[in-house]
Length: 315
Image 1 (cartoon, rainbow, N blue to C red):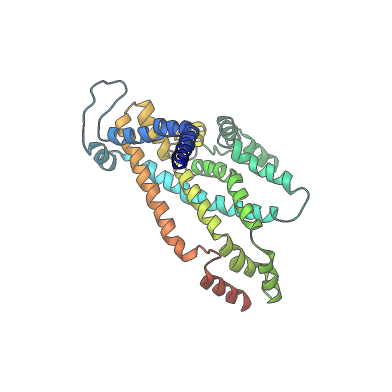
Image 2 (image 1 turned 135 degrees about the vertical axis):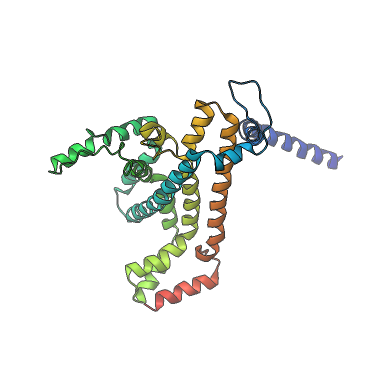
């Protein structure tokens, strides 16, 4: 009798648990899993929203991307350039600001809010429009430079050499989320490490490279992975500020995917592009994880800990 009551109690608990997670499960199935499967299927078809005649074309979409579509390769090159320049700059700047805010000061909470705001509003359409107005030929930037005596009449967004760097600058400006994660990691580093290194005569630079960076390396790994993904997924800035121009110099991958899917209505072709992007991001993520064994330090790794300790002591 008691055993039956226990089983019934466990059953009720399971039912209650499933009821609570049902909204998440429904959202996952409807908005993640089903579209994920459908996009994979559509990538092998010539599906067009305006055409009811959908046929299975096999690998034709993928072959066309690599052999006939020059804009596909161009968008890949632009995206690689954007990601490989912006991601390191964003992480370096976020870490620099986090180390400044790690000091004890009454104004630090205010600074944290101020520096985090760009991450909240930076991806909005309004900020993108404001950014576009800053860098036009008659924009604020050129006005400031002329007020300083510098005769500058460059159309930053219309110049093929500078347009992509306007987008990169906006992306780097949105460093707040990475900064807060770095700051939380810095708070977890015990001051005893720095005190011991200072007794051994280590300088600030040596302590940064031998204590701060190794102990912060798991946080760096997390931020690096997240920013690589975000770097390859950039869209709003390019769509609003430049529209992919001039001469496709800011045609990032997601923008070109969007154009094929929702401007030309080639959903099958766009689905193939989406899966290629998934493979590219997965490849770089896997490479970062594979290399992390060489540079990511965990406190339970006693061998690396002793190695770093010896490196500090020698100075």
